[in-house]
Amino acid sequence: MATVTTFYRSVLALLLLAGCSPDSTISGVTPVGEDNSSPTANRTTVPTPNASVYQFQPLSIIGQRVPLGQYRGRKLLIVNVASNCSYTPQYRELQQLWQQYHNRVVVLGFPSNQFGGQEPGNDSTINTFCTGTYNVTFPMFHKIDVTGATAHPLYKFLANRRFNGVVNNPPSWNFCKYLIDENGYVIGYYPSTVSPMSPVLLDAIMQ
Image (cartoon, rainbow, N blue to C red; front, side):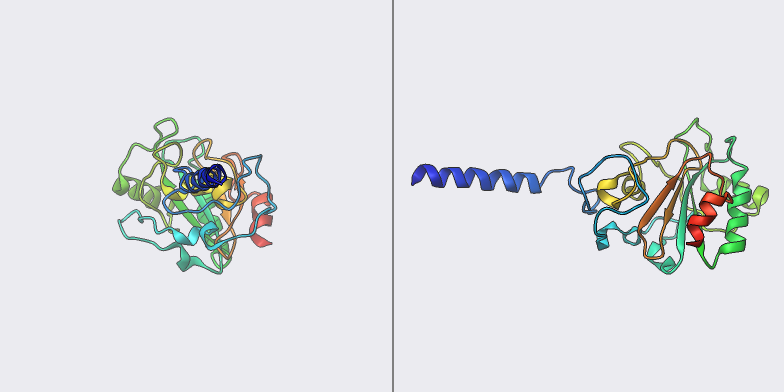
């Protein structure tokens, strides 16, 4: 009997350790699945509240906390942006998308300097550049890291299918795009080469 009891105690201890693994959460985000295979546009797991981007409140480019839940009811297009990139002219199409379809989608720009050092400025200079050069009026956010160990929790969530349930792609360069549905759930990833006004992205936004 003592041997059986010891065995069950050992099994219980292993289960508790597995549940407390440091990789099981990112800033309180609970994984929605353990499959890290290639991304798909079709959700294979049941969404949970922790699988929504509405749990995040990033800082705006002027330092104000922005609860993403305030955009419920419209899709979100989350883009990591930079001022000195060959893709920087996409700001023009991002602004066009925002102006024409703001009732359907909210464009959110997150400056980052991680790719080619192409966003060296601070929030103030970035804001001046965006508004002065491209007349940007869509929401812009505080400059952050978007990949690697220092990535903002929002981007750790966006890049990992274990947390968002669909996409398993970190940004590969500036102007990568994550599309979020009207309830805050990730539905797609688009690399830098997909322009904001491209038919493939517009079709996904209008669905």
